[in-house]
Length: 142
Image 1 (cartoon, rainbow, N blue to C red):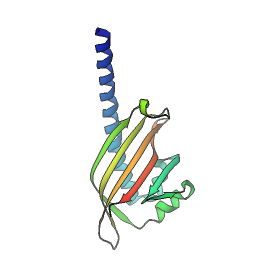
Image 2 (cartoon, rainbow, N blue to C red):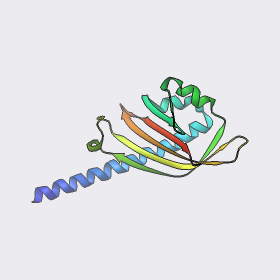
Image 3 (cartoon, rainbow, N blue to C red):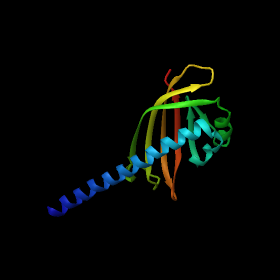
């Protein structure tokens, strides 16, 4: 019986450690990604895995056209209202990578337009020593 309790405590501690790590990386990611998106859009490519899936308001963006699409977007400024970060445990993903779900909401102001509410969900995966976007889904709240 003591072994089962010890295993349970170890599992709980592991969950806490992974959740703490996910929160730290997720917070850092949100800060850096939106600063880059608003100010250095040409550098966004470094955030994405080579096989990343991108959905923009219901439309899939071809990976070869990702950089052109992002650079050609109108100038904008994002204001993040809130974000939430959750680890995706290996038990629930088949990739063999550590993964993090990052959900973001806020408003975006395009030059010459009223601000719009948006939601964006990312799945980040650990590739070697870096976190890369595996999935990016952006949607206006219209």
